[in-house]
Length: 440
Ligand code: GLY
Ligand code: MN
Ligand code: MN
Image (tube, rainbow, N blue to C red; front, side, top):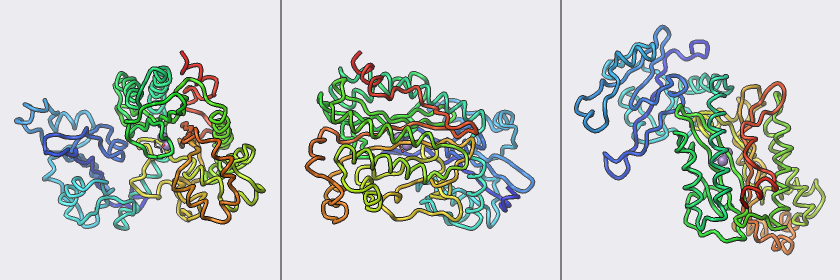
């Protein structure tokens, strides 16, 4: 900390969030920075790190609350367990420029603001003081590359995620609605004592990128896009997407586009190596999608023209992936500071504007690789109205692919000196393996 230019910092775990009334609470999820440093999901606790001290602050258990929420560890028990000094919150004496990582929600922000006697805004990514920026940089440095214990956790999350996807594929032909598939997949995660690392996406409308409704009825010609990942009790995530045919068989058009996306993913994964710039991995996936869609007759023109026009980004409008760790988009509470190193920032071109990561890869980093193909009505309408893009797309040919609304294929990849290591490589992915499971 001191080497990073941070004299004093407070890392808060946050408060549980009420749902409609005060005693109906959403499940508590501690701040990932707190989990990383303390290892326990304690509500309303702060870790105080100074030049020559480190202590945890938390209110002692309220004897009355045991009636409702059971016994909580006494402060001295916590101190024993964590090998830290533990004091009541009222003893916290922050300095004038104590750094913090502002929480993302208003309630925890208000609480921390009172504790630190410092005006804070809920985190929107930008650091709120020079000291906060230095603290963010120090946390990024320690969280960017994962150690063996963290990787073991991520492997456990990946193993359970595999079971969830396999169960979903097996159940798919007998399911009439999206929520039935969701139930089967989440049951596997719950059965393992884990929770979803993020709101699952299980939909036959995969072109709505953050589709979080599960109401649609499934029809035999649909594709089901399932973006579902487990989180271990300690908070480490997996993030996996598979796209499967509801009938158990991809149609020829679905299969053709699926193979394009799969090839883009395969070649991108191959490049996940130390020293490679992640933006280049993204551009390579974009290039493979460009050529694949041209081979299918959906795009037309020279490779150079198509890349210049950003034609593939009409169908693959998001970045090829992001950092993964304790957060599914790891450390995104710090804005782009984790994904983009000093000196790099997002540009506004259609091919890269949603790219969440542009670091040079190094061993121990875990990234997702998740190219896709989507027919988004709004993007297609804009493309029709744009001279260069409309010349690049054969809309008549595209109409033959109307049963391909949304495809994404997503895996979690560890960067090692020996090349990419797929943490989620066991989740069925080839047309053959998916069809075999969906038809059982
Ligand atoms: N599940 C969120 C994402 O894939 O980025
Ligand atoms: Mn992802
Ligand atoms: Mn995902």
